[in-house]
Length: 111
Image 1 (spheres, rainbow, N blue to C red):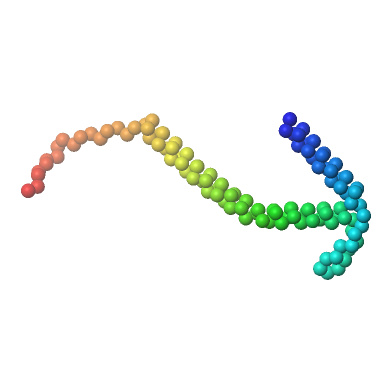
Image 2 (tube, helix red, strand yellow):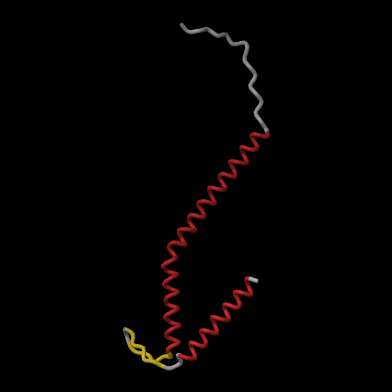
């Protein structure tokens, strides 16, 4: 059901994009820092969208890398705690026998 919904949403977005492209097919003069281009308006709109996506990915990359590092640290802690838990369970399952009392030792109290 979710895949069908995603597919319908994708088709709707593509249809909307195609209709916007059809309506904005006229060519315009695009003046940039080093020159001038004559491009269809939809090409400039797509390029601006792509630049925005790239800038958003760059802005989010620091946070994503930080979260990946924290995830690795937490996984290492989890592994260590699971190992400790396993050893404690083994210790509880196989208790150490009590020590035998020593009876041949003379006790002399200190004065």
